[in-house]
Length: 339
Image (cartoon, rainbow, N blue to C red; front, side):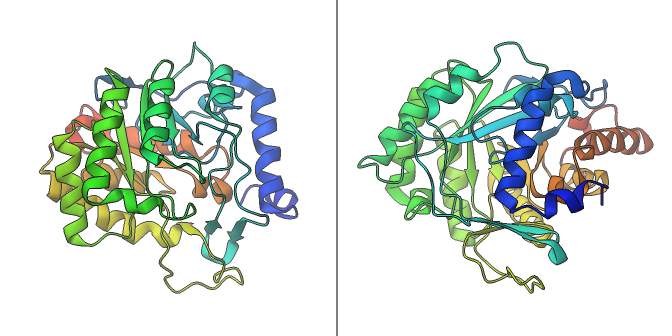
């Protein structure tokens, strides 16, 4: 554990998070360069990623420290979730470290300053790929219209846009993952995105029939990639005193569930969609296992809390070495080799 963790861990989790974002915003890109090599470069949905290691949505919600995160080595940074109107999110406390489990529970509730404010501060020149994750306001009367608005506005700036219908912290949001609501949402979002690559972020808490339904709908509506997956409402055996907190669980306890959903969606899509794996990735070995399991890209969030800001660069460097060891000329050559 890095030396500064006791200092940050002495603070409330959300205050420590805000301090980290402010520090990276102040540093800008001066912390380093995006990690890349010919083997690490990857193309997904026509977008060139300098490396397959991305920052998951939820870390830099309002796009305040994009350059700073690229400086940590990330090949992509996904900001958000952003909603059309600003909203405060759920009451505090709403973010909890489960240190004994190397996990996090959050029930943030799409707290953000609104999509227009965030888009205005996003850099037009950037070192890597910029994604924007969009959602609906909690009190929206037409959530599909909110998504279409977010996709349309974000698509003017982002390299790709993600539709987030898998957060467990906005009541009823996950209902959009099923049936006619899903079809209507994807149709409206695809139209709003125009030529911008459109990704869909799904929950890990899905039954086989639901996985098949989402896979078919995503292919039918020309979604470019699936992000598998968001936080889980399930609770494996945990040791922390915060284990009973309501919200989405992420980090090491999500690893096996995230792996399983990756396999499921690889099977359900037949390899027809690019997959991005999220959940419990904290090392180059784990990232490599997800790539060999079918992921074209990976994303990190909770592991940064415990492994520190050098994690993205360590994973990218380690992936490069693993690809070379096994004779792969590129990430693309390794995708799905164990599937």
